[in-house]
Length: 339
Image (cartoon, rainbow, N blue to C red; front, top):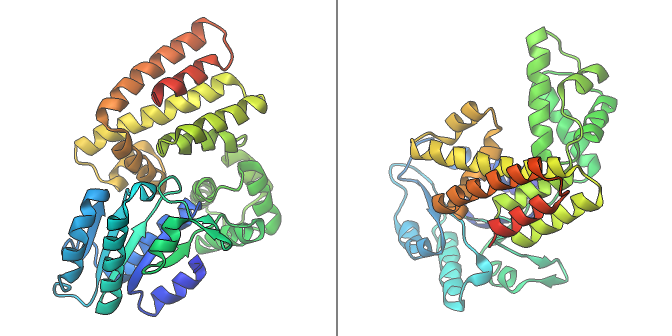
C-alpha cells in the first residue's frame, strides 16, 4: 500500500493493523500525525496508547482487548523496536495482536519503523523474513522517497495552501538550490511563506528563493546527521567517506557531527525539564518533525553516552583548530562515538 492508498483508507474509517516503513521520514511522520487527528482527540490518553521498545510488546494484547473509553475508536502505536533482533515467539505475539485488531473493528494498531529498525528487503522479488512475517497480519504501508515530478507538485501544494503563487520555475529553482529532501524543503518553504506574508506579498520570485533559502545543503552532510540520529555506525562512516570523496571542507564535516550531538544533548535537557516537542521546536527554532527525530535519537543514545559524546566533540574541535589534519578528527570522532 502506498501513502496515497493509505490516505483513501483513512478517509473511509482507518481502522486496522498497519506496518509503516520506508525511507521517506517526512511523509511517514505526516501520516502518523494525520491518523492521530482522524481517530482520536488530542490529549485522549485512554484511547491513544503509545508503546516504546520490545519489552512493551507484552502490553500490546491487553491494550487491544480494552474497548475504547467513551469513544468510537482507539489508536495504538508501537515504536523503537529492532525487528531484526526479534525471536520467532515475539513475531508470533505481534501477529496475534495484528489479527486481534482486525477482528475487533474499532482499533487501529500502527507498527512505526525507522529505516535502521526494519529492513523490508528488495521488494517485490525478495522481501525480508521480517517483512514476510509481519505482513501476514499487518497491512504494509510504504513511504518511499518521492520522485522529482511528485516532489515539485508537493511543493506547489504547500505554497498554494499558504496562498502563495509559486511558478514551476521558482519551485525547480528551490529544489536545485536546497536538494530533494522533503524534510529540508518543508522547512525552506515555511521560511519563504513567512517572509512573503510579512511583506504582504503573494507571489514567489527567483530573488526570494535566492535571498531566503539556504544553499549548499549537502545531502552527504544530512546523511551523516541522519545516521547519527539513528545511531547507525556503518551509514555514518559511509556518508563521511562520501563527503571526503566529494572534497567537502573537513571543518564543515566535523562541525556537522558536533552540531548533531550538541542538539541532542540540548534537547535531552529540555525533555528533563518537561518541555513538549512543540515547545522545544520553538526554543530551538527547529522544525517539529526534526525535533521528533532528535527526541527519538536521545532515547537511543541515552544521557550517559551523550555526556561522553560532548567531551569527544570538544576534543575533536580542539584538534581541528590546533592541528590541520584534514578529515582525521572527524573520522576519529565517529569511531569514538560508536565505540
